[in-house]
Image 1: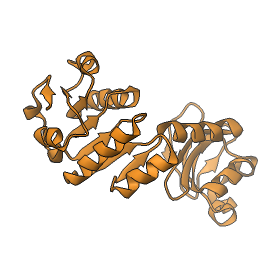
Image 2: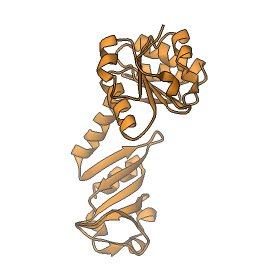
Image 3: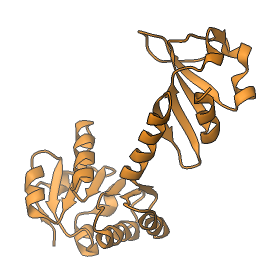
Length: 226
């Protein structure tokens, strides 16, 4: 049975429910509230729930693996549910299964391993994230070269913020044929002391600029190493 520590009935339909208030779930819920999102957070530990009372829009003590408890909380009314349980894999899978079974339109879940992620996908979770794994990969790419930021998508397509390689220095993009020659696109540029803006074929890249490059991972990484 769920015990409410804030008025769950005032939660707006289409908001976000965060199930599990460990480090990941807590940080996510607090950030969503900071951005003005209506958030219902649930956790089985009464001390954790008490610590978050007053910080989140709605916080309840509940067994997230119980379909009856989640139905009572109106979980199916939320546009997005995030299963933020990590280390207890059984609870993570059962909770995700409940959310999917209740017909939540957009279910996210945290996984701590590849097999965990695979099972979550197999039971119908729409978006599976591996925060530690993804951050490790991102940092590895950053420390290996001149890249300043790195975002990878599921299909191997990436966006990278980097310093321009020498082949771009003081030349317009149309004069280099970056896409034709290297298979990537320079989509943005930030001059020293300026702000990012989109590029055009006439954009001239300076040595002290920062650029945003998009394309297949292996081609972007090769381009950043030029």
